[in-house]
Length: 355
Image 1 (cartoon, helix red, strand yellow):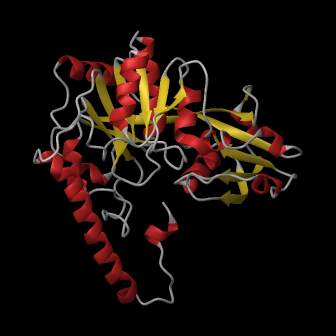
Image 2 (cartoon, helix red, strand yellow):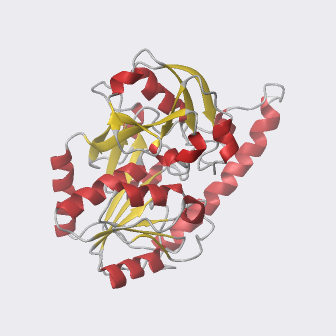
């Protein structure tokens, strides 16, 4: 979680820091309340697109595996013969006010600088699925259905996007941290208060620790809501610019450096330590950081560097000349994929979400 949420300068008295944060949190909550209430009160009506719509989102800022989960769902539905398109908001791209076709299902057409790293990662991760990016999800959906004939639309990071009616509303929750300190921005990591989880049709607990119990925050969720565990499984490492995977055993007992620009670098480091690596240095940038060549040239050449698949799409392999930069590949999938898919398809046949 970003430092600004949790840490304050020790030299600043708590009463001086806390009061502005409480006020800022209150103002933020009012804005978020109005954003969803105008749709709940029918002051504005969501648009019904000519396709099934599945939203995959979260309540916290980053790090809940919603984008990899979107990719997994897209693959599974496509394997079942459905025409699927993914609608991404294109965060941090300079073309977000446009309707951007990031992938036509065969080629990746745009760069992270244009449409954001998540949209480009999705385009490469799910061949055969169209990926569109932009702030106007209605316009994206209309393009996907009219031009590509999409039958199912996946809204990546769509829980707070109320303009589009959805048939299934999936809420991803960090299995280790839950809802953290239970406060909304900027006092905590929540985009909305916990009670808004009632809009979800199911909760997906991601990265659940290896123990039978879910996080204590599971007790705060609405009674009767279906809950599924989502696994994150390391697959292998590959050299930056290469598709050939190497065995994870190479990390065991190896001293490495970590290069990341993600929301939860601490968790990525934990994953690498579980694989037996010893971390001697961490180069961590802000989430969605636009890398420059100097960021890579500053890496020492005497050790192995590991980065994430999302970071890798912003790192041309030529930048790593003379340095050993590798990518950790992971798979995100439900603990019981059959049960999850059967539940999801049953929602289609029953008419879907009323939210």
